[in-house]
Image (cartoon, rainbow, N blue to C red; front, side, top):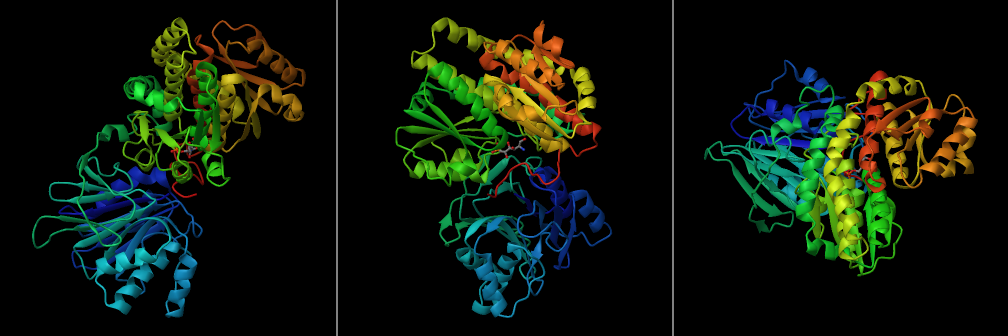
Length: 610
Ligand code: M6R
């Protein structure tokens, strides 16, 4: 899950590439690099370990001329994060440079072939094997640049998005994809390449989403003055480019005055949720609901999206009385699950590029099930591999910790549960109408939670000293406990576990002491009284309780060390509101601890490798 940018045109390539890398840094930030074909038609490669800003320092005062170039920001898979493993990688002669996102599975075998032919390697990466292979084929079979890339890709097993330059063909950039995303931007007299549209949209909204096994040749047309796109498969079949319009706009990609993308994305949830609910109302047509009205629903996803799926299970089973299973996509794809034609698989993904979720979909479709995806990024791989899609339409989510995507995914699942329950006659009219109306009120309920930022910041001061922490909730708020704990772990590096509150006495209560904060999600609802007992059990063992409670709460509030209140909300809709203070809590803890909120260590936003 690295980020790739490319440029071919009349502008100076370097600033376009650097700006593009900053946009794609959410995909990885272990190292960054750029290759430029200079005005003297020399291939200049600059790279450095660390973030794009370090690359900028490295490249400062170097020859940054040239109108054609490729660039990369890396999340390490093969080989540790280091200068020598940074992309672009070059061939033996130094004539070719290549950037790559993905994993080459047969790299060891290909490497041996090249070692036998006398090649040596400068890095531990699978990428270097491919660029060396291209040059080897070029030289041994006397192939052109384009033909040698094509031939090499026919020998490669695995997933890739690549971009390659050849010093001896200084007006040409060759790119290809299989399993990893790649988008071409079509400007008036320039062409762009990106792992997604974010590095492209400020120059053009006309894009071509490459399909698996597509290969594209972008030519600057230094002689013809018009840049040229030639699209083909890696097997040499010509294809007609399908140019589409993207709707993303540049302001959505900026921090908009906030200190971090995460805070911006938390605070824009009232707005993003409104957009999502409107979009879901349109997308959940009677035909889509009929598709969902299967024998069984299998929800598959990873991380935060999986937590949203768990809320979806509670809602669909309660409101539509249809059996639902929720599976981590990484387990589902390898455990030979029983899938039948009467099942519907619902895949949830913010990015639409998560490798395990994509593989789970492919498995489900091979077994004859229909797939409906809930996705945020329009045109990404998961919706394209699905039979139907409901977009969450919350705009780009850039902070690595997912926030607005979660509330939107839960809202879509809730709407599905309501419409499905109604269509199946399991939900009476008054309740259906009341809950549907209440969904429209959720944005203002979230606003009220966001207004308590100061109290949440104070709670964060205490939590920031913890080594470890427990989140507990019941029913609909058990998945919220899991999600709250994940948020804390990933951005503040404090160990946290989410538990169903009643499970505490089956083991975890042994951990309770004054040093162990217990964040309790305790809104009013059918199970509130049971939760009160669980909180009592923690307090009796001197645990320190921080609680999310409904306005006017008396019982949990009395026992808790600190509380955050949320407005009254129906139990099934409560996760959309209760998660918001927990997002803010983890945000402020990470800030107090001086952590890199938007780009936490070891992580990347979209996990396009398994
Ligand atoms: O793009 P996806 O929704 O498929 O991503 C799934 C997970 O990688 C993602 O939710 C991850 O867990 C987030 N970093 C959580 O904040």
